[in-house]
Amino acid sequence: MACNAATPLGVAVAHCATSLVCVRVFDFRPSPYQTNRFARQAKALQASLMQIVDRVEVVKNEHEKLEGGNKFLQSYVLSASPL
Image 1 (spheres, one colour):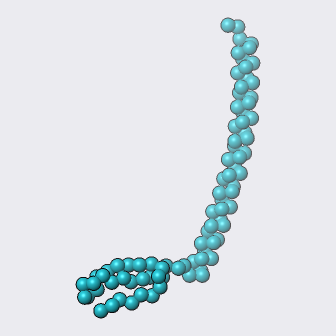
Image 2 (tube, rainbow, N blue to C red; image 1 turned 90 degrees about the vertical axis):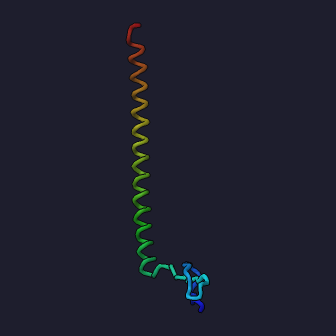
Image 3 (cartoon, rainbow, N blue to C red; image 1 turned 135 degrees about the horizontal axis):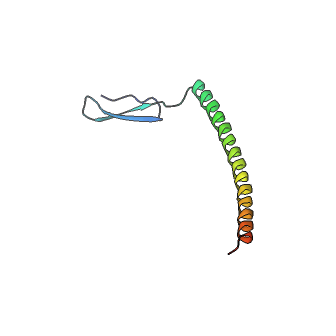
């Protein structure tokens, strides 16, 4: 007794009645609705990621400014304090 195969996209192995290994193939392709949904989700995630990247750049620039100010204050304090 042989098993039927539909498409070559997914494979499941089971034992048939004749004790031979039988392979059943399943179609795992998403429907057009799912493809559209995945595309919308990907675009939303990409937009969110771009917002995060932009925010990281802003924080990085703020940090560099504060670090520069801190170095200036440290040098001022060290030069103004008597040793």
